Image (cartoon, rainbow, N blue to C red; front, side, top):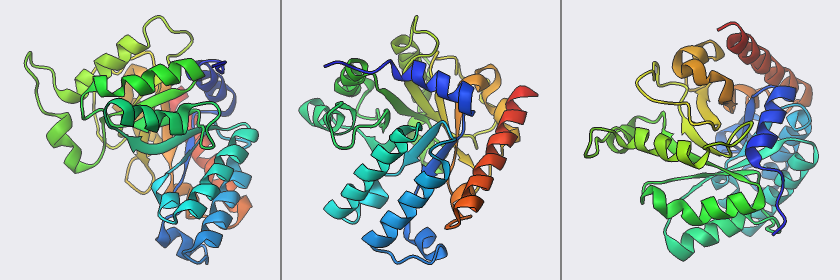
Length: 281
């Protein structure tokens, strides 16, 4: 398979040129209603196309949440395919937020769905769950390397339930979340200018100085906006690793729709706040 330039290199360039903001595409029923749209495929398509039109030519990353498309069956997945293609054509990198995780041939099939260059849903990166053991992700790691794509592995998530797994201490004293970060550091060793295997680390978690976030890879940081974190919190949470953070904002931008200009303005305000926070830290 002839792959793209590695995701990490493409992401570093996009972040440097456009800023690091990632905007989610999360067409859940309440947002469709706020936009005056029906909770159906037509509303889904109008929503996703409007977000792509508003911001795909100016932000580094768009992150569609697959579940909100899958709930409409094959017609919803067709809308997702179109949104991914149009976002990438406009210059945004697409991180598919599908949080897939399984073993063996099933994990390989998930990887083929999102990371094979000829797949209808091919995305620049995919979110994955390592909680069947980090080694279970091997098929996705291998295909991502081959195709020039990336992964974002759930490591330290912001949901309260996550702690019972991610903070569990393993023999030797390292907890599970830190173990995932250590695996990713190995994947990214010697990669320049940035590795392609990132971690999902919540922006709402406060001081993470006890964790080694220097994995030479990107840190996808949900939680800004509606979940309570602000751009100003980023340096305190991520410390020296803040340069590699990809801050994700979903509702904070999306609630300004369906007006394209209002969506664009909201994204630009967040982008400027993030730029200021990261450069003044």
